[in-house]
Image 1 (cartoon, rainbow, N blue to C red):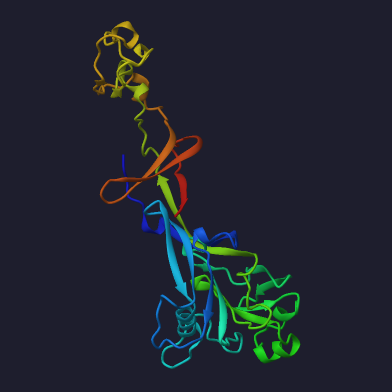
Image 2 (cartoon, rainbow, N blue to C red; image 1 turned 120 degrees about the vertical axis):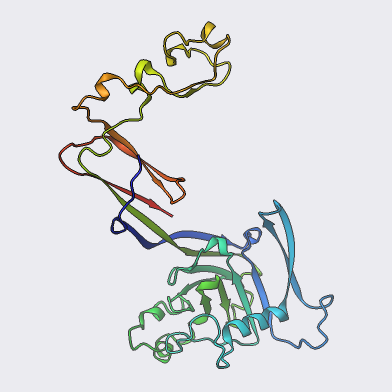
Length: 335
């Protein structure tokens, strides 16, 4: 009993969902790292003597940990070329709206990374809050939604100077010195460019990084419409003559005689010899073929063009099919 669904009765609606995460200085095993980035010469660069950091991280594919080494100078040129160079026609990643985002890289920086599986499509702009303790002082760092990281305690009004005509010079005048870095939401990267008291941010003591991940969920909706007298039949095994049908029962099962037609019962309540499968009967009980028979709908299945069952929808309670009006069932599921 299959029928095609009209294309006008199908719809797909995307919507964004967000999830809260908290990472700390002991979360390196998940891929959250704090890297040093220092400008320097790459002439005759040798890994054996270069300043570096090593971290162990869990690799799901192998089910074990592996170590990675990150060098200060290559780290610096990585973020410089990816986010801070502005040579046309190659634009850096992140916001290039210089009326709202100020990107200045000095000779050193701290790079906080978030693994892709912990932020989805991107870090939600405006959701970053990071408590960083360095030099005995705890700093409250936040993002303004446009890729600027600022010291909230220094200037809690930094993000308030924003409008359609907002520009950084205006914010700088009202919150001078409060910006300390940038957030690159699509890559899960936070760069602290401040070279003062935040130079050792995240490396000499602890930090707590809170943010929201972003993921697009697609809601599929199908309207299944049954016309009057359509699907006026049943596949329920109890409707066949003498309760026959296709029944499969494992060997050694007990108390199974009640499931079989007369004269087909296994002996000894399942301990004797019996067939594992009984072919379905083709004859229905009389009440099923009566003109007043109105079955109840309990389940809707959606199939693809290859006749493969993809989705099963269970109704909260059985619905009696009408002989006079249409019956419409709305099936929704998220992917």
